[in-house]
Image (cartoon, rainbow, N blue to C red; front, side):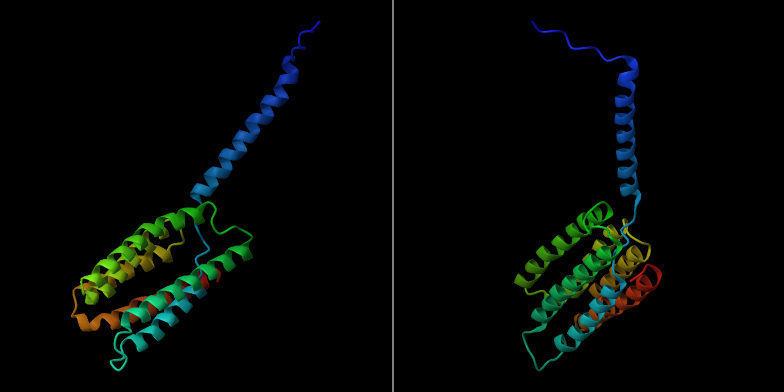
Amino acid sequence: MNLPAPKLTVSEREPVALRDRAMDNLRFIRETMERSASFTHVSGSGGVAMGLIALTASTFASRPEVPGTWLGTWMGAAVLSFSVAILMMARKSRAAGVPLLTGPGRRFAWSVTPPMAAGGVLTVALVQSGLLHLLPGMWLLLYGTSVVTGGSFSVRPVPMMGVAFMLVGVAALLSPPGWGDAYMAAGFGGLHIVFGIVIWRKHGG
């Protein structure tokens, strides 16, 4: 014969309900803090390194005695620069004891990706059309757009740097084609170094 389950009294149910409400409140507070937090792990020293890579690339890309290597030089510099940036951000996150791609870091990554992807597609299209002289301005403009969108989740110097890149990109698109390497050096080299030093000094590394 099955006996009916004993019913909980009000006093026995209250601790369970209070614990559940407390856990829900803690979860809500944690999620709210993550949404409002800034991604502070953009590395200033990584930015300086990216700038130095770009300045080095500009000296090789502009050499007339090495024909056909312009695109390869800048693409190689881009791969190396992004690798350095990711490694330095991961190092900064690890030093702070926070995973890189959680909360603000994940939103930062999602925000920078679409303009970067658009830049990749346009690069292929412009190369196939033989319009290589448009690449410097397009790269600078879309990279700046990427930094602005991602910078909305980061510290103030990051979106400011993005705006500066966009302005340099517009100037490059409106200037004679022969000025492309100078704009690339000024943008990917100079702006990375200047803003990298600012981030390094004000936001810890």
